[in-house]
Length: 564
Image (cartoon, rainbow, N blue to C red):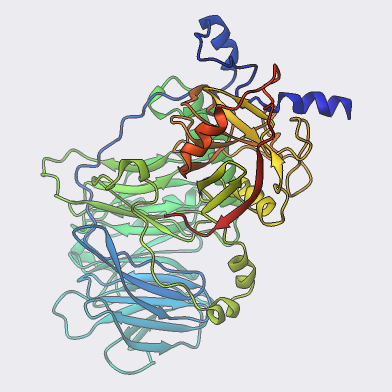
């Protein structure tokens, strides 16, 4: 206990060692000793993708079987309509070549077809098998709107006329010897390209369902590189054909992106996005692609979690309108691979992406947020909340609903109220610990045990001397650093600790910018109201150990789901 007390005495490493009570100059050699560990990264140059463009509405698919339509507006996006499309997860979502129809399919053996223009469901197909993948195989103006669907249990591909009013296919054939895993269609060449679960690629006509001799320059697959995936013992996870029908790209299970020429079937480029390549790049001399060690380690851990997921989580690549840019997600971020192009940039390109373990999707554009100080939340768009009975239908959904974390809190002190905005998206564990302690009364009547004028106010220790306090889990928990949350302004809410990964219950609020604390203490909130209360508390007289001579207490902490 004596050692623990000595350890917690350094809890005020809200500034790793004793900070002057007054704003006096700190010798440069002392400052260097303070900044042990990761330092602030140099500002990264934003890579502008000149020719990427997404014309289509954002149509996210969901693991609970719900489908939502959103419309892109001059300012942001607008929620339009919500469908409870399937009983289970939506396994696939495919837009037609003319962008007029959308199909969704699921393990519940149903296929739903939607009219994109009118935001309405047109028809539903009931299948005798579980669909694995699908693709529209018709050109604009054709009489029949044909949809090809592969069978998860056999090499069969079934073709349906979705406007025909029948659940029976108009044609069934076997382009592969094993189930077709991915499928894509090029209306420019009237050619389908498919890959089976063994990694073999095949070409077939969207009209005749045979080899499209007129659309390609080879007659045998031996004259092409269509066996490249099978030779590498890799499976195709996604296949995308450029709109001009010149290239197609395959995201593979070996974490490589292979780009082929459609006409020749030749492999033109391989982009290695494996974890080994990322490690080598991080250790190399190319500063442009280096990340902070802590950030890189966190991303590597998440990538390993993604890689271990069974079944594999969906990922995709997208060509831009010109066919010169291929955009796909990587450990380092969203990459754009391109050949030279002289086309002019469009006025409002938008890139839409989903994120691992996040129940939201993100839009990237050249627009700036309306308010620079609220860049993270000022662009949030909310639609209607799901009903309780909808949540209860899905296994485990009720537990998830109960774990929604508050985004705000009010500290009621003996000197007045302090309103806080919390960041559960960036540091969920820290916010959960703070708000749980607040709800169960752990922080009630605790004093501010350490106050340093021109620096910070520290509290959260039930013993009142800086040596006590524990997390809701009964043990110390790890830091949650975020590039978007820094000690770059006063009135920042941050966790106190005695070193890396030693967070408990104590926290502090800064009164000046404290950049030397970045990557040492977790920022999990900002003060939005009550700064006058903080400045008033800061003026309190203290003893030689920075403990106020007059007890100033937190009466309690009230949590809020949102703070305006």
